[in-house]
Length: 360
Picture (cartoon, rainbow, N blue to C red):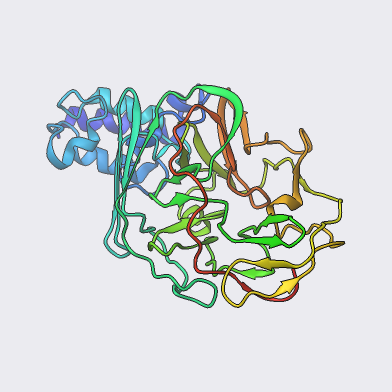
């Protein structure tokens, strides 16, 4: 690097570090444009990224240096620095908006995301890039195995507001599918049918700390907040970009719980006699007269505007519609408000039956 270029970068660095004049003077949209400037992929664009950039300044933007050529001009020059400065200190949730590859040899994670003018194509083996629980376990007899999954979502979502049910509403940024519902159920001799919720305290479905477990196919998938994925973000920003919805909108998690769902427990007592849960060792029990407590999906009711989110756990932030994963029901969106093609239909395969613990 020439002395003149070095001085130029040093002056620019002072502007970035001390004044942030190129960044803070402008309003920051929800998902623009910090992704490619996070060179070390630690979740934030900071001075360590600048040092990496300075080390290759003035070189051709080819080979391993390609990621530093932010304007795709073929050279890593001052125009690229201006793009870096505009992204400096932007929030980590932008990291996965553009094309990227995620490979973690320790966990076997392989994810490729290609974004073009029309779509976002995700190819994944569905192995998470974080620690999981022990599988098989008492509630889930299945072992995690690599999958061969491909998803294609629109890059320019079309909002319909139709709240269309979606069994598999999206995919996490690490390639693990989101599947909030279950295949487990209770059928009663008097005709009632209850879908068992994933996150409840009656039926042991073998979830780990990430609110995830494994299908008989070996597919690891999330039913709630992917805790270790969220914790992996280095920044203290509240909103974390944790996935892509099938309709093209982005999925976030609020660490502070700033966005609350609009669901509450029904106060109507359940009906149902001579009921049997799916799975091995069935037993007969009655649900008639019991109070909804969240064990079954039908225990919950949507009530508009009691929370911050709509029926699909969506809201508009900075003028952009997004979905929010929440600590409370519905946890992950059960429906989508944009146009989409169903990833899969019907109910997921059961993990060979829940094992009851206590009374329903």
